[in-house]
Length: 332
Ligand code: FES
Ligand SMILES: [Fe+2]
Image (cartoon, rainbow, N blue to C red; front, side, top):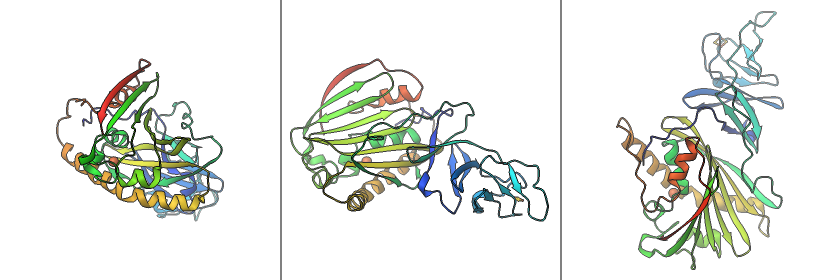
């Protein structure tokens, strides 16, 4: 698909899972800008990854109780960017590393390059709901255009070809009723089918699924949910951070209702079954990004199975949707 839609610069994006920010600073990127994320006691700081002294990457340095230390001449910087110590001198140098707006919310460290961005919105349910076993999964950045990575999560048409037999099967398509619900500022597609999907993953972890759902919340959150006869069985929420024009870092959150199986076991099984699927998506997105590189942008094309893409494009551009419901009948 096209790369015409670009991520809004005046938005919050996650740069780390908060519990991953420990004794070593993390090198991250947001919209092309290198950032360092570090822990200073119980605070987390996000700075431009460039020491104001001679430009050394601060992410090569060390975290301490009061800030991050540059590995070149040892200057230390607090979470607000101020130099707090200059080894060999009795007073710190009057220099400041560029601080980036950041906030910890829903287990993530969010950053914004726009100084006046309003606070990030809470993530959609099941965040804040009791009775869930949940975990964040720190995934590697992958070569992909941001909007194409979002679409990939929510796209019902590629699994037959990219994950044959695992998620869907091209040889055994089944009729599926699709209902697209549009609110002003989010959209979802409900996929209802009468039979169990004839593929490995649905059989293994979804049990008697009756409905699967894809949702998009601007600017960067996709969600897929699998419901059984008694309600949600698995919800995967993914926030996509645009690192650069063709690199994306997804932050994936898995949530299942608390039940008989221990949370650790569910986490291990969920990760295990998703490893091959994620590898297949990574490879496909990288091939797509390579093919698009250096070419004029593709004009937007919406196929009959691209049921969410027009709404996603509109929401990412900052537009509002006309609330309503649409029905489709597809073979998936
Ligand atoms: S370059 Fe960082 S302390 Fe000199
Ligand atoms: Fe996929």
